[in-house]
Length: 231
Image (cartoon, helix red, strand yellow):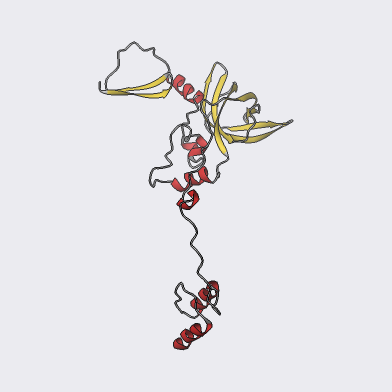
């Protein structure tokens, strides 16, 4: 009572209570929890990442962290465009390897291309213990699973991609308009009258001569009468 439990993973829960809990749970370091979040592909943003990413680059759609049915909210148009128009080509990846020096958010990652190295992304979060390094980084979606990485500031470091614990498969967009479902048919074309001016030309003449034309077509004689009245 007086608290709640939030499920983070299948075997990991976050317990929130107003009073200390005496339930015999083992005591761990905060850094261990951070490392488990990294292995679970859960992103944490810091000041260095401000304005760098959209939610889909951090895999929030795979973590049920984005609503595509909710009403207006800040950034909704960008989020929807990334989902339905395929405007996003980056995603969050988990990497593991070895590094002797400290690693921090914002450090540059390089990918090996033959005998050369090229900048590939930026460290989002990192966890180190006894020379082992786990980190998350936003990389191109088409990154090869066997790609080799290193930290720019430490050429001797080596990192490899790890499997994500969730799927990044996107679902197809539902039809936005009843016509796409075959419920509506295109409106029938109006029959042409003998000697009538095409609708497109009518609109051009109407705007140019400040004549308001209705949806029906006008014959040259009727159009001349309108122009004569204006003169």
